[in-house]
Image (cartoon, rainbow, N blue to C red; front, side, top):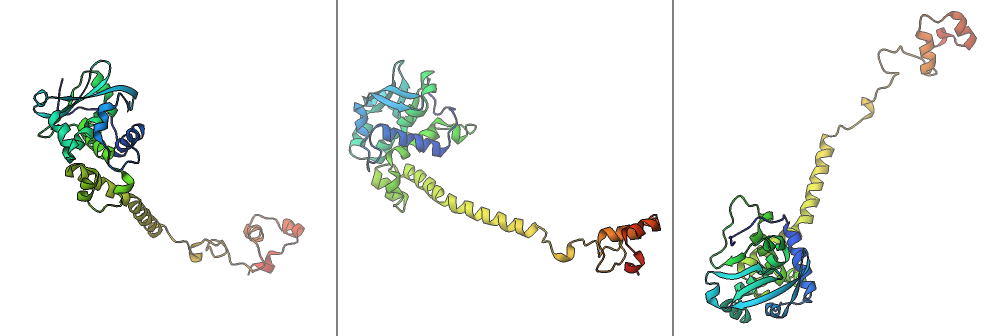
Length: 265
């Protein structure tokens, strides 16, 4: 079965990019500036989120995929990526769209094995795949593959020193739309720590503004409380308590040595 898109296991964009970097590392191109996608023709095993699996890249006649730029399937024993000869030739010449197609299909290979093993056929349409509105991005096979393709072909360390999507497209040989997606995500990632600090600062300012400020005048002082009688400075709460209670016999005061008349006017 072949659809434009599939519902797959949820992945955040940063998780997809991490998967792409793991594949770069597995293929030995982690630090390479410009990935040679045609090296995949010699790859027989590939890393996936389900472990290392048998893999094959087939270059097929254009007539085999007249409406698609690439196709990923599972043949019962291995994951297979089919690339039309026209796309392979353009990739060899450095065309960004064609190079990106290889990376896009690798996004399906590494992340969507469960669907492929159930019979899903994942093409990359020449006129762009259509994703139904009810499929959220983080569960869209096509969205994940798009994010993956750019992350696989782009060296993060070098890209951080570039100032535009055009520069990224030229430097790493990816399509301009893919470079724009990557550049926007990179800018968001760079801005995120600063945004977090601003939010934290605002939260602290709001908390300080709404928290009542305690002052000495607001504290309850039992000596100033109107329910207590005025007492001499030498008195204590205990003394006052003993002296203002009318039920205390005079003999009790005599035994304690306290004379209420001395301290209460």
